[in-house]
Structure formats: C-alpha cells, structure tokens
Length: 123
Image 1 (cartoon, rainbow, N blue to C red):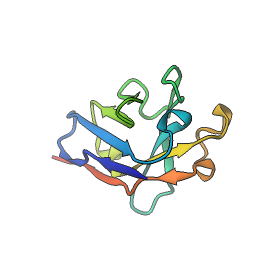
Image 2: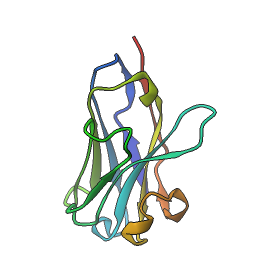
Image 3: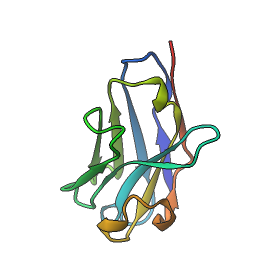
C-alpha cells in the first residue's frame, strides 16, 4: 500500500513537499513515480526515480523546480516542489512499478497507486 501526504494550499512561488509512504512488500525493488491530474485533464507524468535512487526523470513542465528523492530505509518517496505555479494545481499520486526504465512515464505500467493528495496553488 502507498499513502501520499503533504498536499495543501500554497501561494504562487511557494513550496510543498509531498511524501509517499509504503507498507508491505519490498520497497527497494520498485521504481517510483509521481503523477498528477487536474480537473478535466488526463493524468500526466511528473517525475520518477529508480529503485536505488540513482536515476531520476522529470516532465519538462517541472524540470528545475521539482525534485524526487527516496529513502528506502523509511520506505518513502518524496517530491519537493518549489516555485509552484497555478498550473501545478492537481491531485498528485504516487505509484510503484517494476517495469523497465524506458516505460517509467507510462501510468498504465504502474502496479500500485496511492490515494492522491490535493495540491492547490492560488493567491
């Protein structure tokens, strides 16, 4: 199971850190991703991290502003979001996959999903 937290209301330019805690299974076996979905929009890839944390990938829209990291001892993946914009408003979900790295941006290949946490960027 995955449990996401850390969402909330923040002003443009502000920061939030999302957390996704795993229970059960061997967390260090999974590549982890963050996705988001805004109202009326398709779910989109945000960021991903390899099982050992050595590789990361970001959507162009968040590159340079968001940072994904993980702590395998704590079974937790994080998404640090800085310089937030109104267009970052969405429900953010974490997910786990064992599929190859070249499929990491494809949500259909993720096995487990957290429940999502709302991020609202507004003044």
